[in-house]
Length: 264
Ligand code: MN
Image (cartoon, rainbow, N blue to C red; front, side, top):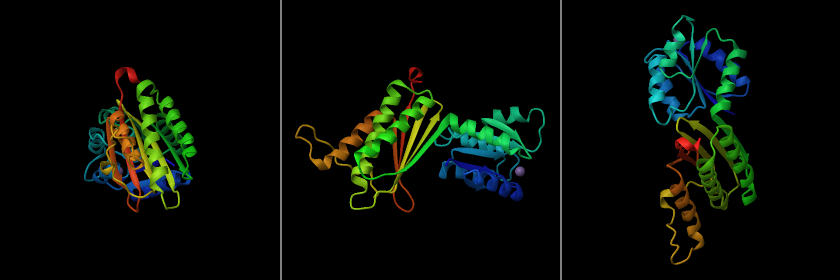
């Protein structure tokens, strides 16, 4: 399920809203002040942020400005929540970078409508438990195609992202679970201003793509170089490839493809 970050200093409001959203099936993480909100936007990678504006340490306007200034978090939609429905409040929140605005006390149906609209616009997610077979790739690649189409991304960017997703997922399926139980793969697609981002998380054996053997096409490919060939291709087609080990085992690979003006 999509992950929501609630940044709210009032404990009663925070608990009530998080319970109501968790009951709707959202994965909810919490922050009690603006600085914690900025930090968790980076570490938790939420799909959407609900930002109270009057907050200690850093207020919601400044926290939003920092979230929208950082490359890793600026694509996350931020909905401002404010208790004072004063004229000018909404304009001030939008000037700070908030994508949407709502008032407290929360009207849950109305807020859910906004949350769902923003999630549908920018984020898609698929989690699947895979047997370690090549055929498992088809639903994953269909997901990437659907997500690209839904975000209006086509042409070379969509083709390159699908190709990179195939290489990364095939690599995990064929090599990551060797001698282990196959585990789930989690794909998250995000449309950012000027770029599309695909995050692939697995629970496979940890690897570091930087140590993949370099393919040598001149002297013929050995089987052990196939992974290296895949990573070579991924690096050539993506603008950015990040890898980090997940706490508790596994890998997170972040693929970034920048969009040219013509590319959607
Ligand atoms: Mn507050």
